[in-house]
Image 1 (cartoon, rainbow, N blue to C red):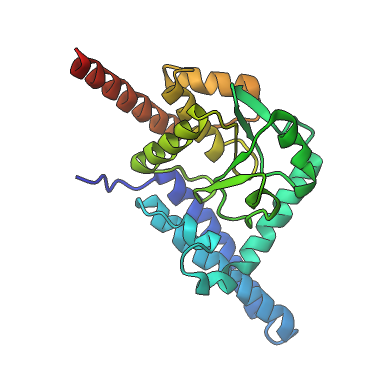
Image 2 (image 1 turned 60 degrees about the vertical axis):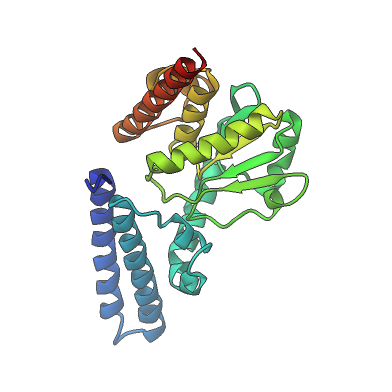
Length: 257
């Protein structure tokens, strides 16, 4: 039976977004008699944030709204998300410029973790031979640079602060593991290379035998990239993943015996 317990962390974040949304609607109303253009732009931003809040509620109850925000599904809704995306891009760009940190970090042989790269940073991937770019963002546009040869883009859009379901995580890791075993070098990123992408990389480390527990995988990821920050509920996701892999390994051993 499907677990219908909501993700309380995402619901708390949704409450914050909704509070900001109410303030934005109020600003749109206050400007209505003063400057119609500002009022209209504020109303657009408020509608955008309301739509994103609805996506977070969907995600909290087990849905997968990332592709909708990314534009991979229901592309007709993209004009609604434009204000939110513009703010997301601005925050991302400012943070990337202000932070002084290594951005392509090797967490295990031929697997690198980091933030979404600017197009001008492609030499960093070329230097380590990374040709598979795993994009886990939904709030940022797809990079044209890393979506064409010599790179192969692998996308799985996730909302910021959200984690994949157990089934999705298994599918993502199985796909990446096949590529890794085939000799390809992977670069896994979300917006800042701290949460979503770190969790996927930790799961990949467990699947590849470079870590046996969630705690060990996170410790190794942090040793390679100190910015890694996985919430307690993310650790629960990794623990369940490690349990499934251990069970599958025992079952396979028993079948061979």
